[in-house]
Image (cartoon, rainbow, N blue to C red; front, side, top):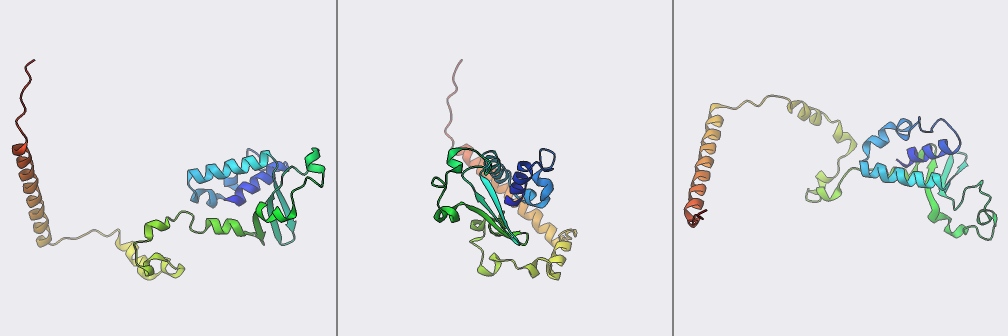
Length: 194
């Protein structure tokens, strides 16, 4: 997600083809589709703010790349941007690092995108062996067989149909009895003459 947003920042800032015509979704189509609308909006707003303030800087180190927040645009002619005594300290630099990339893989982005759409609190009630799904379990023969069985028609025996009809009749009778009891227990309301 951050890769696409940062890619859009760089292409716009450098006058590339990523302007209004080339979107971040075109650069990484699968990334934006996996995120919710709020996440996309917040990331887009942050990326736009960094681009507008020219606060995102990139350092290419061969196979590695570093994206960090710069206090000013590198081409700004402001006194604060040029004076070496007013520059941020190198001790503060680790706090300004946005992402570290190596051979096309982004470290912070990868950590944030890992299970980004999973609500872990939802699965706390499950036993431990069901909380984690391994890669081999996703494409196993048992899983494929269960997927195919999902589309088969359910065949009920006559006994099962009779049992279901009997249970439905009992439920309807209980509802009627409850309704009759509630009407009998309700006090008679005096009618208002009008």
